[in-house]
Length: 435
Image 1 (cartoon, one colour):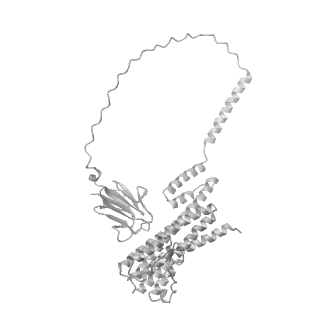
Image 2 (cartoon, rainbow, N blue to C red):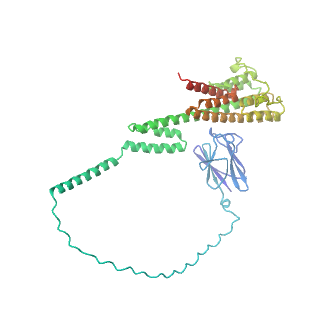
Image 3 (cartoon, one colour):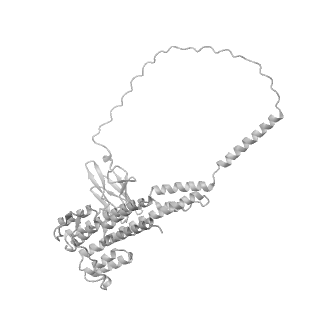
């Protein structure tokens, strides 16, 4: 029987693998990891005719097998799977490692007998020529000038040898700098950027060139760490936001508890653009935030949406009991990269549903996936625009940020990203027209 060895948070345990097993942060998973780097539905191990297969369930941080990202992978004995910060080792039974269809190995083929060596005629070399001897000439005594030259030559050789010895000895600070660079590169390859920064901060200041390079690399890594932290915070904030909306739809009569959840969200994320949407949600449930009347709901544009510009197809009106209609309409908007109108249409549909209906749960799950797709859309545009800015291609970079603003609009759930794109457009304008 195959087994799984699970290593997480310093603990190790083994479980029998007898059926399809899923991994994730959500309660619906077979193995649940309380890990922010793990998606709600991260990956799954399925039984197939060829054996046990690992399938990534479109997780946010991806799934690795033996250090490589995979979408699907047929597991072999001792394959090491990375799920967030957890490690799952696949241990197959001895019977699984043996192929029953193979018989005993064929007998080894004997090599052909060696060919008989052909008789070669023996060649006798000619006799050596006689050596002519001559009487050496008598040595003349060396003059004082030649002896003095020999002394100076010996001194010069000793000086060159000594200089080469001292030149071959490296400065200890330079040796230390080389070692630190090698150690930092290993951490960077493993994406341990925080450890790499710690190593580079130990760079000797006496080695000016290495110290300057180290400081530039530290600045780059700190920007990367800040961006990773921002993305983690955004993902956590999105999860909290979606949970509050889901609670409001499923519990319309629990307004006080909804207000407490929104207050906690406000304390954790006081500058979030989603607070306006949550205040409007609380107002719709019977009052404002904190029981004080609250902020009026943000008006939503309910005019029909046309895809593709002039002559496009106008979407049919949303019907509360027709999930296929809204699925088609929102799907067309997502295909056109119009995430803001898609979320508005889906939110209007959710408001008209019963909180206990299966359509409400499907719509909320779909809404979370749309937000993930919108985040990937923004990240791709932002990275491409930053490269263009470095190349001073400002017009092309502005076009990418304009596409983000047009796609997201003023939808509350995407307003933060839309403002970010608008700020970048202002920065590009300042770069084009320096004072």
